[in-house]
Length: 366
Picture 1 (tube, rainbow, N blue to C red):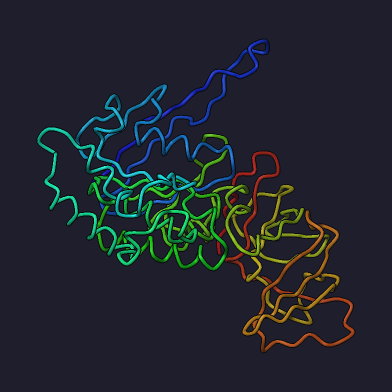
Picture 2: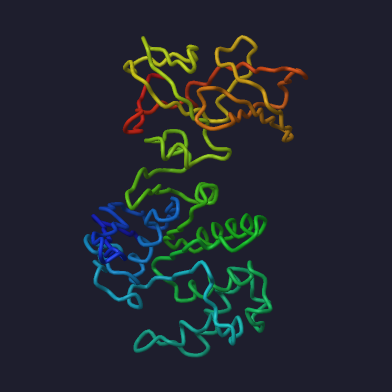
């Protein structure tokens, strides 16, 4: 099911009645989510991603704009009539019911021509439970399950209605690191098996990038960039996107473009043909450094962390906007014991420059 958002806007009144004013949670969001794809809405707390999800689900009404499921305008349609499955951050399971009863609950509330026989409901519940691999837990209650198992029950309950669209609101935030990794792989598997158009809200960029067909990066209710995860990582449109995506995060420096060269701390570190002379902010991905004793970028060595196949060099630089500069290099490269400085050349496709005032990307020929 294709989902189309047209100029979607949500404005909340200010909680401070004396000060007045309004809070724009989502601002003029236009996007088409292709049929059968998994799309991640990504951004920090307060960026409007959950509000967008709740407007798609029908739990919140837009201030402006329209929502289409396929060719159907569902903007004014109630949540129960939209055909969506919604999984909340806190699972929202009924503690007095068994797993089977929790999964069956949405089907027991169907009325009219949608109503199913008991046999059909049970068949659907078993299918949904098998899909999320909890069919051997049907007689247990939520209190007898782990966090990961409870999450699977919540997903099965959303899937049992055979929804047109599956909506997931921070579904992994209550799980520990290992369970998060396992469960996100399960979500991707389930989405591929069912082919249901899925919208996944998270503040964790690693989660979004690992399982999404496309990501939407948001900030203060405004869409910053939309694209395939790797494309957005490789070509951020502004400094916010560059800083938000990537683990370890991008290294940021004060710099200057002069006569087609990029300078950091007075050293010409890269040719940037096509860029105008100006002061800039420079972003360098951790994997964009090449250890070179004659390299132009010289940093003060602080530590070397061996990570197996890679080595993380922790250093400092006067022009860096954070206390440390982290460079990821191949473990075959050796840093001499007792070295006080490390020198690098830079991979041009891993270096981004941004306007110092607007923070918008400045492009140069690579």
